[in-house]
Length: 360
Length: 218
Image (cartoon, rainbow over all chains, first blue to last red):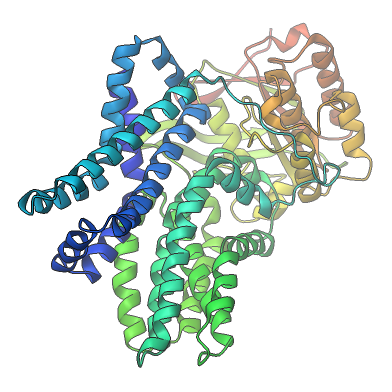
């Protein structure tokens, strides 16, 4: 049981979030040097108020792992996980702690790195604060996991609005995201929004051009690859019957385009609000074509080659490198976005029905 | 409803997973009628049905009325071939109303058809509730209604009689008979013996040794 639990919760978490970690590593260690990390966290450990920023980001990560575990327990395919309750309480607590520590490992490793410097500098208070923080989030995670285990399946909530109007098909996936993956959406949108806001605020501080904004958009869109995985899995698990429907290319592709528009509404609003004064509002349109193009092309890449689902993170890495080069060489975002939308349209028109979700 | 008879023609069909052949049908011509497909669990009945429904990719050709091929005419073929899953899995927050409305529109269901099916299979009392609250029988009825929507030439029902009560079984058999009289061809799979119902089977097939063979109805 423990092995099954570990595979379902820990291995699966890292498998599904490879792209997320790659982007974080790229951002955190590709752009910022390790010396800068050391300088910032050494300063943070002398000032509790700065250390709070670290705790805020780590708490978001903890929310992400808790959300993942809860989601796995609610998934119809993983109902057997509830048998974990049959194991004795002490053994269960040990298992939960092992799982929690395994899931928190990336931030624990970072905190350990910070602690090594704190020991050198004899910053004992900082070390105690770090230990207390991790003890608190581990305990919180353990309590929530235990509560999830004790809860039987919660009934789906009845829609209280527009009951007499059927939910439009493009909203099936959006509802799925909001109801089943609210934390994934929250974390994705937080990082994507923070990136966009960051580049928008950085833009007027120096002699930057639109390429800075484009790089922010590129990274912001790549962070959404986790949603692409959910989109593909949702369609193949829950909406297989749609493949028996006589939907023309136009109808299928319009539904996908509407879903992209809905997914990127927060980024579009944020861009309108914080777009630097010297940048034309036309840029917002270009930005939408580009970020949604990355998303729709990634989804259709998986339709074309279903086993690519496992490689989305690698595509993210290559997508970042190639995208960065093209942006640095002043290739217009409309051209890049247009190419990505064109690729997706071609797959949708000619390869859509060849897609089949096969587990290895 | 279509008034011309349907005929299914399968040529060089082959379906494999990870290089392992699940089902191979070199040639199959199904005449109009109600056909019973049998086979042990995992024999490949649902895989065959899903392939015919255009839900799974496969090697070979599947023709309807020797006019529409599933890969060549994806929209026209799917407009005429319906499928109801044996164990349907739908997003739990959607209602049967959401699903039926969407499929009815896509399959161009005639006016009044949805209401008639909802009444026949007696789902009016719960069809606006989320699927997550349904019993397996309620879920099965939803899936069956989806299978009857539109103007199909061929309807495939995978295990249509399981999990539903006796009255619903009688209603489903009556629906099959009624649609068949209007020119709709049926492929049914079941572990239960259709000879115990009022339905008259025209032929029976069994999936064994990774292929489909006709067997005599005794």
